[in-house]
Length: 380
Figure (tube, helix red, strand yellow):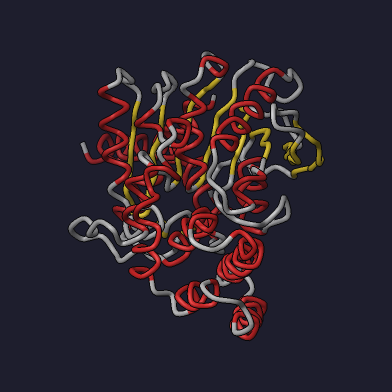
């Protein structure tokens, strides 16, 4: 009896190692956490080669990078980062795409020009649609004629809009929205402190408020001041983007902005002063009348657009204060109500917006491993 029980337990343990080791290994790779466990896990970690290309879209060709594993790829993925000025060499994007490729996927990373300029525009959704359709049509990149579509932060919501369009019908293995939104005006109201946060939600991050302010500038300053104000806001966002990867350069850019803003004419000088002081409520009061006009286009919100029929995976950080965590359950409810029976969602403390965290209880680690395992199953 004891021997029989040991054999059963050993068989279950062996099955669990085989079943979940690829996802567990990928989680360790993405977190960047050194671990003896990673070397023990029986999962792929191929050498990866890269090639920079341009991808055609209706708004012009855009830069992309192909990551190819050394051995035969098991899937094809296209990854779109969120609002960030970084190019193909941005460390977090490059590391994410490279590790996905090392796990056995052909990966194409595509920073969208609009999002690199801190603009959430319908043309960004068009570019996601066109780049994804192009990859799916390239036999050398997508032998099965289908790709997995991964959108990060605001690109997650835009990717879901693109996925519901006829051009991508039948061409998607799945869609992953990592920290994405369901309704852009609702998120804009949160970021601008126009609406009170949901119970348990954190106060909004000033980064998102400044992104909205940048889009509203033509309505807030005289025409001759628009270029000056836009440059100042872009400088602030550039500095904010570098806070987590190059603090010294970030601090230098903030100091330069503070010095230069004193010479701006009014009302731009006062407006940039609010930004430097990170006064989200005051910024929100300025943009509140324009939120529906700036963000209300159907092409910017999944809940205002046709729902995709592809399997959808919604992953969100528990304490996200750029796109609030409440967006994920609302988005899941919309997709399921629209008839998509393949929606899976997870809110986890292992993510802070779109970045991995290393400290979390074992139960949360296990739930994330199972979630990513389901994504990998959909990719095969």
